[in-house]
Length: 125
Image (cartoon, rainbow, N blue to C red; front, side, top):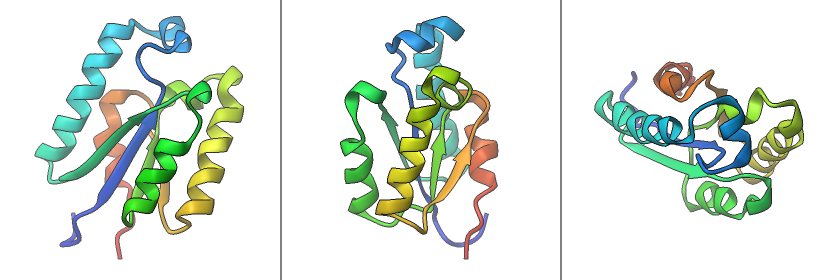
């Protein structure tokens, strides 16, 4: 990791969202989401924020976080990306990030366990 301290948002469905229960145990997802924040901080990614939102929540929390300061990366969780029913939501998250913070890099995980790998793909200047 370079000298720049990256600021990263991780967003995905809250563990209580009905779509989560279709693919995994919601309690296991809750624990993994907490662990991923801890793991990223332990790896030197100190400025990490988790924003767990679904389509019914809208994007206002994400917009607020993106406007609060420069964010190097936005990791979009696999629960959104892998669901055909939520493709529109993934597109909305990407459009929102691009409109509000065009320099924020969009990253994807495959599970909550590989957010560190996703963060490692950031291209820092």
